Length: 122
Image (cartoon, rainbow, N blue to C red):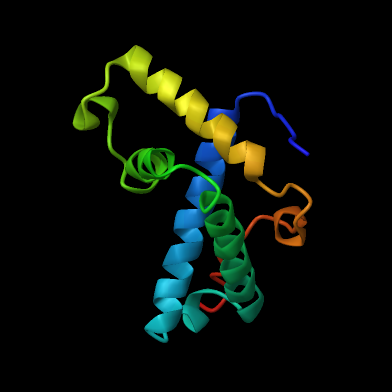
């Protein structure tokens, strides 16, 4: 079942920001650095969140996934990828709609509190 929210593009931006942060946590973990910055629960939650987002992206067309990565992961601007503003916003809305048509809102990882950076060790 599809669940719609207002300002889906803003919500997609928020999710992709968490996705990038989760990727950073796992990158640090692979370098044995994460335990100094994040606790084990954050690391596990990051893995689950990445799986949830990647599972959602598997359902989308390649050009939609490429667009999401260009804008939200690589931080490209519309002019960097040769889009006028109107084309960009149409494509952004379409990408957000497609993403949320497949996103699993009921997933336990989505219901957990936002990942926090635990700097208490510093």
